[in-house]
Image (cartoon, rainbow, N blue to C red; front, side):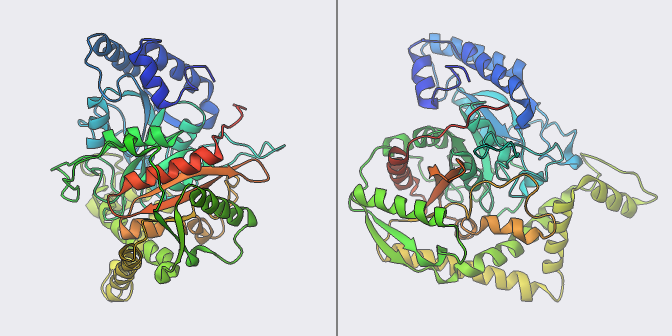
Length: 491
């Protein structure tokens, strides 16, 4: 890791402004780091020529006194975001040659503010997975290792490439998408910070859809401040996404370091799971003490419908996926496998183009939406979703400002260790995160310590709708108390 790649995003921003180094030098340092770290498979496409051209343009704007909020900052983009003229595959065979003619709204916002694109990062195919093992473009390896072990670990999923790239200092920040925990779980596994904003805070336009009522884009970075800086650029009203709010975007960075004295933090009793590792309970207790020491009031709360969140999520998400993925049929774009007629062409294209996990979820989704089962499964799941949302609303109405929970039920596990015989084993990784998506709330994962094997553990803060600022303030308290954690380079 070079001196430049070890900088925080905020420090790099300040260094560029003072002309301590150029945007081209900063981009070069990261491109070299990416080249040396290909063993991680964090990037599925590197864009060095574009990065250097963008960095050169940033240097010109800095010298002209016209620097944007992210001027010259090298970022990575999850392969779910459309990027004009740059291959975007959702890490699926069915889109292996797709080159969009437009940028997603999120990437437009980042380029508007002067950010530099280093490349596209790996993810689970169509963002369906919790370990980045379902990608058509190969598994991502975490930059972390257990003490005294060379076993390859997962960086989490689906945004595993973005999390691994940030943790390994291969970018200063990255975009992710979170449908059931796909930003927060990888952040917790890699010792990075990741936030899923309130549903509607960030535009979904130009992001490959998985489950439209759950998907939300957000940033990864190595510090709470850096994550706040990125979210301010990513967020904002977009008339092209009818679910995107037109609320003004606050300067989230101003919330970092703000006192949390007097805030009421809820501790949901339902998150104390049977068989939860002692280390998770210990870090949760530690988080409570840190917030209490900073003046927050801790209150026990109940979210009674939490136990139904995971099964309801795995009905709603596949149902929406089966509908969204119907467009990949070999007719307009992507892979096409010929058949004797159009029906056979559809069947062969989808059988060949989608991986096993995506096919599984499409079939589940199609089943729960079918005549005779819609009321029994999909309708009931939506009713449960309403009850989950109401649980949170009741707590907030009773004066609770945010919740503190574990981010994951364990530290990172080995590549291939879970879900081979029983997919449900992998789905259980989302047990602490799916409620936030079902209720449309903001949630942030922040590193809180290391387990006995030297692996990162994260805590999750869940906030009121559109109150990301309070989350940044509280997350900064945890970060200040816990410190920063960096993976020891082995790659």
